[in-house]
Length: 187
Image (cartoon, rainbow, N blue to C red; front, side):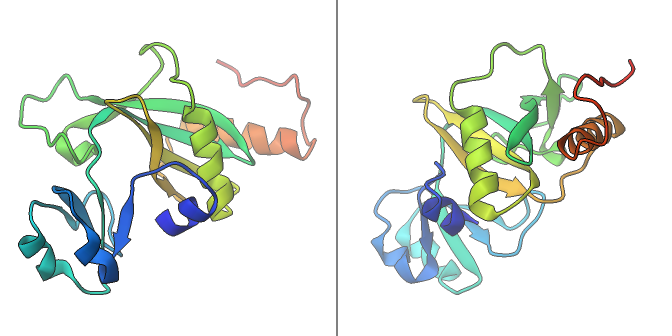
């Protein structure tokens, strides 16, 4: 996916195939298994020596991003239809992993109520969908501590609550002119 992002000029973290691990000069880096889900197979590596244990075709490395904010941006047919911000779950008191921002580590998605959408978020998500050839997806978009926007990944089968399924269905029906553009979902 990161290779498709690079080819499509989608902003994202710098990454290395296992064959280029010897060219990494700044640590820490994140090592991921090629096949992973929900924050699994995620390793923070602090040295070249430590990196050697992952030097197989099963892994790749990427720069460790200092995240200021992270968003889940839903894209359908080249348009953003919802943006959620990942926030710490205020009801949880346990230790939260600041690097892996998923539900298991104490992070939740908040729809609205968090201010303006940072510049570049929508464009980055649409670019990710275009680069990967997806008509629908949920991009994990970050803003780093220096204000740079990038995409970690785009999920082709994100979990959807009924509200999002309804919004997506309306968007598709409007696209194919099966319902009026003026139609809105009942409250």
